[in-house]
Image (cartoon, protein in one colour):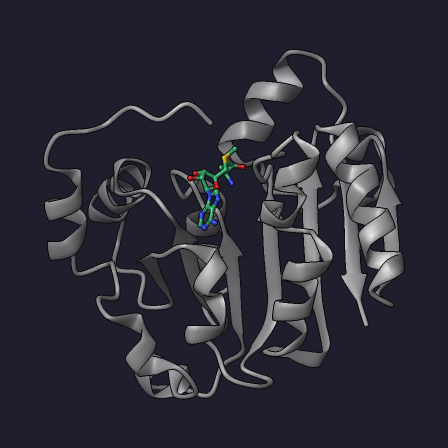
Length: 212
Ligand code: SAM
């Protein structure tokens, strides 16, 4: 993803009431943070946040956290929240997913969404892909037993890599489609910013559900 440095974005994100500051302090106690016992779903690489804001409005009894590495992108999600009605079940974190184990304790998250994750095409960067076996190992440590990782991408190379990594790591794959928008799984699909852009170009969207 090409990133534009947005002047003041770091400060605005640091001051936003929609962004959890020092989120490590809620590791193991996210239910206290949300003040309820609802399940927790997260999106990693949330970008401008459209996917998660729509989901959160549709599902008030699920808690959502959107994790994004860059303030310049997260700022757009935060601005969206400011224009919405109060949405107590959605917050954002400016955080690098590489350190995700500092955020969540065992069985704390029941769903992980990965939408149009960066492909990191060079072999030597494979470990940085959010569906690599290294990341699956991390997710395994905080995802509930019946939890799932739901991955969407238009990048065939990254998608095939994901299926291979899942098999290597002993994860199961289901609801696999290479053309989501023309599949039985399209009902209820929420388009992300990237999904809209790439599907408008005619790229088929791939999707898989990963479980253990
Ligand atoms: N999910 C959005 C969508 O589908 O429209 C954005 C997709 S964009 C290609 C990938 C996003 O993941 C970028 O916003 C990027 O900054 C973020 N990202 C990449 N690596 C990350 C990491 N290690 N931790 C958190 N966010 C990351």
